[in-house]
Image (cartoon, rainbow, N blue to C red; front, side, top):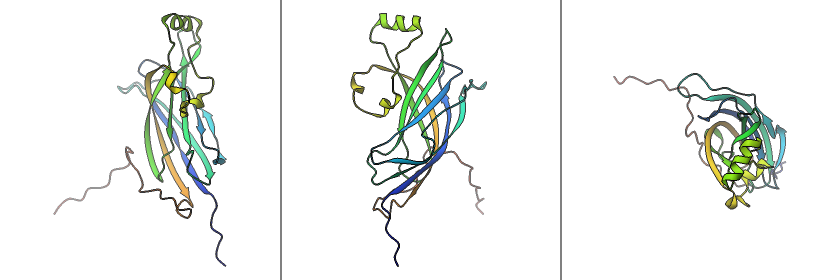
Length: 204
Protein backbone atom coordinates (compact mmCIF):
# COMPACT_ATOMS: atom_id res chain seq x y z
CA UNK A 1 0.00 0.00 0.00
CA UNK A 2 1.42 3.39 -1.04
CA UNK A 3 2.27 5.86 1.71
CA UNK A 4 0.01 8.89 1.94
CA UNK A 5 1.48 12.04 0.42
CA UNK A 6 2.52 14.67 2.98
CA UNK A 7 0.25 17.66 3.58
CA UNK A 8 2.88 19.85 5.28
CA UNK A 9 6.60 20.45 4.93
CA UNK A 10 9.14 21.06 7.67
CA UNK A 11 11.82 23.75 8.00
CA UNK A 12 14.51 22.95 10.58
CA UNK A 13 16.95 25.69 11.52
CA UNK A 14 19.87 25.71 13.90
CA UNK A 15 22.93 27.91 14.12
CA UNK A 16 23.99 30.89 16.13
CA UNK A 17 23.97 34.64 16.51
CA UNK A 18 27.71 34.72 16.08
CA UNK A 19 29.05 38.25 16.55
CA UNK A 20 28.49 41.96 16.05
CA UNK A 21 30.35 45.08 15.02
CA UNK A 22 29.31 48.20 16.93
CA UNK A 23 32.43 50.44 16.95
CA UNK A 24 30.90 53.07 19.24
CA UNK A 25 29.54 50.72 21.94
CA UNK A 26 30.59 47.96 24.31
CA UNK A 27 28.93 45.50 26.74
CA UNK A 28 26.00 44.65 24.49
CA UNK A 29 23.49 41.80 24.50
CA UNK A 30 21.12 40.54 21.82
CA UNK A 31 17.50 39.38 21.72
CA UNK A 32 16.00 37.43 18.86
CA UNK A 33 12.50 36.35 17.86
CA UNK A 34 10.85 34.92 14.75
CA UNK A 35 8.12 36.43 12.58
CA UNK A 36 6.17 34.15 10.24
CA UNK A 37 2.93 33.88 8.28
CA UNK A 38 -0.45 32.52 9.37
CA UNK A 39 0.12 29.11 7.78
CA UNK A 40 3.32 28.52 9.76
CA UNK A 41 3.58 26.94 13.19
CA UNK A 42 6.61 26.15 15.38
CA UNK A 43 6.80 22.45 16.30
CA UNK A 44 10.06 22.33 18.30
CA UNK A 45 12.77 24.56 19.71
CA UNK A 46 12.67 28.14 20.95
CA UNK A 47 10.99 31.05 19.17
CA UNK A 48 12.89 33.71 21.09
CA UNK A 49 15.99 34.12 23.20
CA UNK A 50 18.29 36.58 24.93
CA UNK A 51 22.07 36.31 24.92
CA UNK A 52 24.72 37.00 27.49
CA UNK A 53 26.45 40.41 27.64
CA UNK A 54 29.57 40.51 25.47
CA UNK A 55 32.52 42.90 25.58
CA UNK A 56 34.64 43.92 22.62
CA UNK A 57 37.54 41.69 21.66
CA UNK A 58 41.01 43.14 22.22
CA UNK A 59 42.18 42.64 18.60
CA UNK A 60 41.81 45.09 15.73
CA UNK A 61 38.33 43.77 14.81
CA UNK A 62 36.85 44.80 18.19
CA UNK A 63 34.09 42.23 17.64
CA UNK A 64 31.39 41.47 20.19
CA UNK A 65 31.21 37.65 20.19
CA UNK A 66 28.03 35.97 21.46
CA UNK A 67 27.93 32.57 19.69
CA UNK A 68 24.36 32.37 20.97
CA UNK A 69 22.54 29.24 19.72
CA UNK A 70 19.41 29.18 17.55
CA UNK A 71 17.36 25.98 17.24
CA UNK A 72 13.78 25.88 15.93
CA UNK A 73 11.56 23.78 13.65
CA UNK A 74 8.53 25.06 11.72
CA UNK A 75 5.82 23.32 9.73
CA UNK A 76 3.73 24.89 6.99
CA UNK A 77 1.48 24.14 4.03
CA UNK A 78 2.92 26.86 1.76
CA UNK A 79 5.98 29.14 1.63
CA UNK A 80 4.02 32.40 1.98
CA UNK A 81 5.13 34.13 5.19
CA UNK A 82 8.53 32.39 5.22
CA UNK A 83 10.03 32.96 8.69
CA UNK A 84 12.26 35.93 9.44
CA UNK A 85 14.52 36.32 12.43
CA UNK A 86 14.34 39.73 14.13
CA UNK A 87 17.31 40.93 16.18
CA UNK A 88 17.42 43.67 18.82
CA UNK A 89 20.71 44.71 20.39
CA UNK A 90 20.81 46.54 23.74
CA UNK A 91 23.48 48.10 25.91
CA UNK A 92 24.04 50.70 28.63
CA UNK A 93 24.08 54.43 28.01
CA UNK A 94 26.19 56.90 30.01
CA UNK A 95 23.64 56.78 32.85
CA UNK A 96 23.64 52.97 33.02
CA UNK A 97 20.18 52.56 31.44
CA UNK A 98 19.67 49.75 28.92
CA UNK A 99 18.87 51.35 25.57
CA UNK A 100 18.44 49.87 22.11
CA UNK A 101 21.58 49.96 19.94
CA UNK A 102 20.18 48.34 16.82
CA UNK A 103 17.33 46.49 15.12
CA UNK A 104 17.60 44.19 12.12
CA UNK A 105 15.83 41.32 10.36
CA UNK A 106 16.56 38.71 7.70
CA UNK A 107 14.65 35.79 6.17
CA UNK A 108 15.73 32.28 7.09
CA UNK A 109 17.67 31.07 4.00
CA UNK A 110 15.40 29.29 1.50
CA UNK A 111 17.80 26.56 0.41
CA UNK A 112 19.14 23.75 2.63
CA UNK A 113 22.75 23.94 3.77
CA UNK A 114 25.02 26.17 5.78
CA UNK A 115 24.63 29.91 5.39
CA UNK A 116 26.23 33.04 6.80
CA UNK A 117 24.38 36.35 6.86
CA UNK A 118 25.53 39.79 7.97
CA UNK A 119 22.61 42.03 8.90
CA UNK A 120 22.88 45.84 8.85
CA UNK A 121 21.33 47.24 12.00
CA UNK A 122 19.48 50.52 12.56
CA UNK A 123 17.89 52.56 15.34
CA UNK A 124 14.84 54.87 15.27
CA UNK A 125 15.64 58.57 15.42
CA UNK A 126 13.87 61.39 17.22
CA UNK A 127 12.19 63.80 14.82
CA UNK A 128 13.52 67.02 16.38
CA UNK A 129 16.61 68.29 18.18
CA UNK A 130 14.56 68.97 21.32
CA UNK A 131 13.25 65.39 21.36
CA UNK A 132 16.81 64.10 20.87
CA UNK A 133 18.08 66.08 23.86
CA UNK A 134 15.09 65.14 26.04
CA UNK A 135 15.40 61.43 25.25
CA UNK A 136 19.16 61.52 25.93
CA UNK A 137 18.70 63.41 29.21
CA UNK A 138 15.84 61.19 30.43
CA UNK A 139 17.60 58.00 29.30
CA UNK A 140 14.60 56.98 27.19
CA UNK A 141 15.71 56.63 23.58
CA UNK A 142 13.20 56.02 20.78
CA UNK A 143 12.47 52.31 20.38
CA UNK A 144 9.73 50.07 19.03
CA UNK A 145 7.18 48.75 21.51
CA UNK A 146 7.19 45.50 19.51
CA UNK A 147 10.46 44.65 17.69
CA UNK A 148 8.51 42.45 15.26
CA UNK A 149 7.45 45.56 13.31
CA UNK A 150 11.01 45.51 11.91
CA UNK A 151 10.02 42.49 9.77
CA UNK A 152 6.83 44.13 8.49
CA UNK A 153 6.33 46.87 5.93
CA UNK A 154 3.37 48.75 7.38
CA UNK A 155 4.28 52.20 8.68
CA UNK A 156 8.00 51.82 8.05
CA UNK A 157 8.00 54.66 5.50
CA UNK A 158 7.18 57.22 8.21
CA UNK A 159 9.90 56.04 10.61
CA UNK A 160 13.19 57.97 10.67
CA UNK A 161 16.14 55.64 11.29
CA UNK A 162 19.94 55.69 11.40
CA UNK A 163 22.35 52.88 10.49
CA UNK A 164 24.14 51.39 13.47
CA UNK A 165 26.49 48.41 13.21
CA UNK A 166 26.22 44.85 11.89
CA UNK A 167 25.33 41.43 13.32
CA UNK A 168 26.57 38.15 11.80
CA UNK A 169 24.47 34.96 11.94
CA UNK A 170 25.21 31.37 10.97
CA UNK A 171 22.33 29.13 9.81
CA UNK A 172 22.17 25.38 9.21
CA UNK A 173 18.95 24.76 7.26
CA UNK A 174 17.21 21.43 6.60
CA UNK A 175 13.87 21.05 4.79
CA UNK A 176 11.63 17.97 4.62
CA UNK A 177 8.92 17.10 2.08
CA UNK A 178 9.17 20.37 0.13
CA UNK A 179 9.92 18.60 -3.15
CA UNK A 180 7.08 16.12 -2.52
CA UNK A 181 4.74 19.12 -2.33
CA UNK A 182 6.13 20.54 -5.58
CA UNK A 183 8.51 23.21 -4.25
CA UNK A 184 12.03 23.48 -5.65
CA UNK A 185 14.49 24.62 -3.00
CA UNK A 186 17.27 25.10 -5.55
CA UNK A 187 20.99 24.49 -5.13
CA UNK A 188 22.74 24.63 -1.78
CA UNK A 189 23.93 28.18 -1.02
CA UNK A 190 27.23 28.34 0.85
CA UNK A 191 27.97 31.97 0.03
CA UNK A 192 30.14 33.68 2.60
CA UNK A 193 30.71 30.62 4.78
CA UNK A 194 34.27 29.94 5.79
CA UNK A 195 35.03 26.28 6.23
CA UNK A 196 38.12 24.10 6.30
CA UNK A 197 40.15 24.51 3.14
CA UNK A 198 40.44 21.51 0.87
CA UNK A 199 43.87 19.99 0.42
CA UNK A 200 45.52 21.16 -2.76
CA UNK A 201 47.00 18.51 -5.02
CA UNK A 202 50.43 19.30 -6.40
CA UNK A 203 50.58 19.18 -10.20
CA UNK A 204 53.03 16.55 -11.38
